[in-house]
Image (cartoon, rainbow, N blue to C red):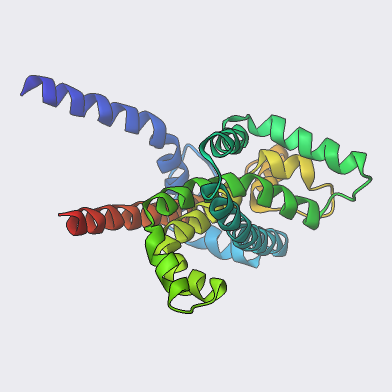
Length: 264
């Protein structure tokens, strides 16, 4: 009893340490006073000011467009790559999976500088397209790691049976394989969208001076001095990422429960 209580207290202290700064930021976003040490009353003023700020709204629009496009393109490429890797022999597949894991284990700053050097070496102008390509690059491994487990669970006999019954390879793929792996594809898309939405380091090195995303805009504004609108923006960004992660985790839990139910 005492041991369990101690474990719960330990976990509670860790969570408090991790999330206390974020909770303080959320509270400050509703503070009427600009002072961080004085509570001036509850208000939505800073959220209203935030949505009236054209620069921040443009950064939000750019962030959402990049996140959606990079997640969509990375999902298509990652799903195709997963299918190709799944049909390979064990040794080539293991090597490619190891290569796929490298970008995820690599430090963001290394990836960001490497991509920036690559673009500069080819005299490619840094801007929207360079950021989009960079986000697609680091999102693909997340899609592959989401889709591959579903492909391993797939019964190949079903696909072969569809072909034997006269279905074309494309028709059999869309009617047999895709419905089976779709939960993994959707998880990969949502995870990619979340990672792209939240990225700062890689975006900072590959954006040039022509565009701003939310993360780079917050960084630029904080250097000038923290405005209350930044508390509101950071709160919305944190909430959005949290909601997406909850959706992904709940979906994965439901899928695991569904699979266990069918296995029994």
